[in-house]
Length: 294
Length: 287
Image (tube, rainbow over all chains, first blue to last red; front, side, top):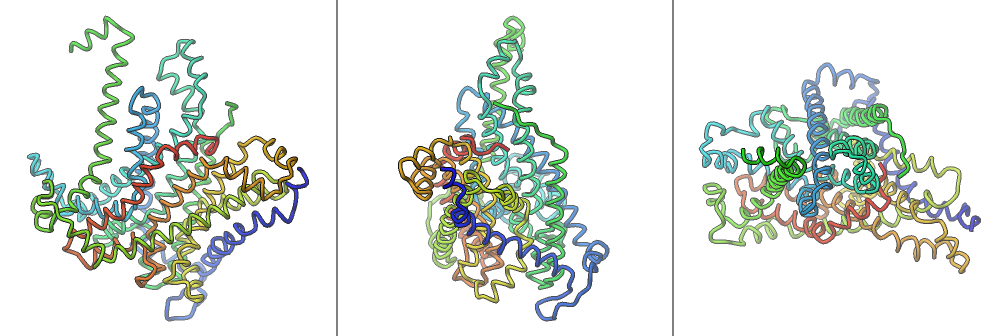
């Protein structure tokens, strides 16, 4: 038996294809991107070595990049607060419900399986001033003074996108937490109930500590997801008006595949990569988890 | 008011009931918010442009399917739909084959580097696909994979590896050790063990990763937009964004296209919704 599981040839056959593809099409391109970010080049000219110049240019001259960076951090913060918190609260509420928790769970998770492009376009129609579904509704409700050019005003556009993000992704955070909560043995709750602990106390002292690893995972997934955020921006505002709602991913798309500044695009993608790695490290450092035997 | 008086007389039971009603009301409200845009786009897709613009909230009257034919034929949604099916299906299949094999070797077989290899795969979780776009684009255009479905399947598959391998290997390692021993004593080879024992009993985990994987590649926009410039390999999400340019005032067919793009994932979700969480709780995601 042991011999079978130590068979070097079999191990190579099993793990080989995946690791080769992974290195070839994921790790190597990233290393190439890091290297190319030191060269200035586009579709027409040959690469010219410029060192870190493009990064300096990014932070000093590229005002759109600064806006995009700010917006990306805005979505990072809003989605962390709204989705993680709301997802957690809903998951706790649902696991304590006597009835219908399955129905609610299925409805809440539904938006998460939809294509972000479809979701973005749908909400763009709802916020749209010419079609004016939302404005029309406000008028019908007698709230005409609340009518607004939702996606044209950059400020409200940012909040609208943050809301759609919340609408789409709260369900996926919720489902992660529910999976973790359902893994907690019921005997723990029974024991504390016999000891006279209130429901809130049970949540605070049993549920939350035990799902801490999942809280960490979901915060990491959530932050990386919002750093990479592209589809909703592209379909709802296209980065506009006047690049005011641009995020790093959309700026990267614009510079590399519409203006064909490949070198600069590579530099932007390296910044995005650094942000993702940094966030993961910070979250890992800040939330310490212990393994409880359950 | 009556409730508060009653609750003081019956301290333990009433407040819970009241708070529970509030919870139900809040949850119902949130459920309505979740369903409302989906319902709206569905109803609106049966209207013509004029009634869509003048009466966006009324029920479609008369119900007309013309938007769907326009979207399917002149919007080429039918063609993109098939492309999406092929790309997502092939990605799913290849990802399952490679990931389950790698996960098995990492979690059950005995070799020194298994932890290192696992960590290399986990690195992929925090890497954004954007960082590979330009190099991959350049390489693919050299070897003729731009505008081909293979050029989409490869990055989708590779970026699905980390999560799939992570979930599957924690699933595999939760299975009891004796399974393999008994099988080997009965004369099974490693392939038999893997194909006839491990995979069949891991169906909950395989289900979860399949659904996640399929939904992810079905919905992906950025890579598909960049790697497909012509029509032959374009997927549905790219097809949807095409409507914004070419039909800028023609909203009704776009809404029909949106509904068509939403149907498959909603269908899959409705069929398997209970299995998603099942595969996750069965020892799969431990955080």
